[in-house]
Image 1 (tube, each protein chain N blue to C red):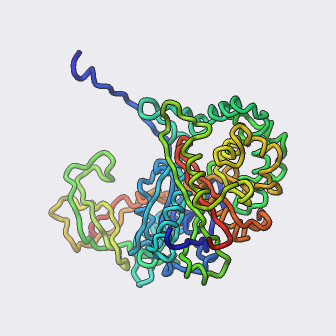
Image 2 (cartoon, rainbow over the protein chains, first blue to last red):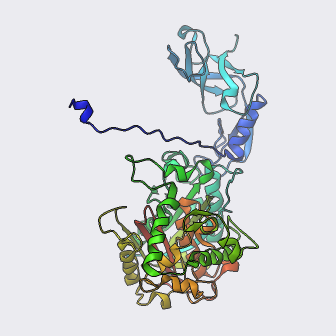
Image 3 (tube, chains in turn purple, blue):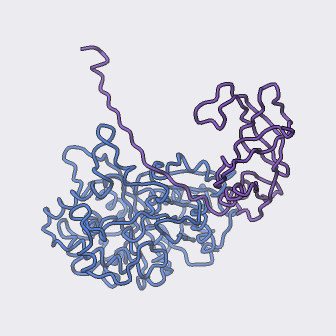
Length: 149
Length: 385
């Protein structure tokens, strides 16, 4: 008997759906995207956190104040994807970037469609490209693109 | 035990099938806020956080304690996560109590939750052979044969389970946090409900709930300044055994008997039925009430069913069991054990509201999990030990 035949193995696919109740804070962020609005929250030290958190990361207090930010922002760091994979948001090469939206103090992770790595720069200004039919999902922003494009 | 530990704050969510109005962090915070209000404390007063929940697969969020740190006010503080299957709510409370008893912390927040609407616990428990031992379509499929074995062993009347369910469902009507409430529940309604896993009928089984339970535990000095009467921890115990081994008594597991014996010894209890005023027992399927009455030493082997049939476990019986309505009425799995512990504390604090057992001074909180293999218990009292 060949060695590989003597090894015990079996396949088993276990799958069932998960759902998420997003609650009032993340819910407002996602609903805002439907209306091309990007909402953050103000935390106790005055910072604007985007995407929002329900509880102040420093004190644990519930956040109460929403602040709209962007829609333009600045790239603070990025990594170029030369060969996009099937589930990536774009089929052509793009950058994953942290984008600090105008008025925000934290970075939002999203894709930037810049054409080539040569045009990507830390500090470059970008704007969102919105999906035509928006449903309240982070993919309502297809990607960001250079401000002048 | 070094320091004494008191329960000074208890909070529960309104348990329900689908709490779509809150996120996982929001659900937990609802319970924590109520516990803080009861204890008269805020985040700054808490030294450490101990979180419990059942398998991560139940929501599909791996190690949720990581992302819950800010919602739990745990940033910059020690945080522990406990997991012992269905008994986790109980073992979580015991771990939290041990941090007080060891003299490490003054006030500890302990919280347990499950948001069952986020997935499907039954199918999460139904992994096929050879990847897991066969448990046949969720917990009900696993436990029904054990109930049949109990019935065969004791010749208990067939309707014992119906009577447990009726009693717990009537009690649930007096508890504002209850998930399932049937205002017109009757013996016939339970009897005529569909058979799910013979002999367990639909109304003899627990629901799938979204819910959380939180407690603020405090050392002696901190307890004495709390606004509401404390409950004092008199004893805690935990025991475990494997799911299956030759000769295992799954109906009356040794780990449960040993756990109860150790608990009573520490608490100085010689006759539990006489010395305890009420008990909150983990009964996810009706027949587990008589089974655990024997395992816990409230009844001799083979006679637990008599306590149910005679009404001893009813709210006006000599040992009210699950005055809250029990797991049959609310089952956010990870929290279900902690709810038993918290409800026992509410009883001896005199704060159980409409389902208060009059004059309760000493109570048992009990949780079990896995294939009847993890046990966690505590005895709490109105008097400092």
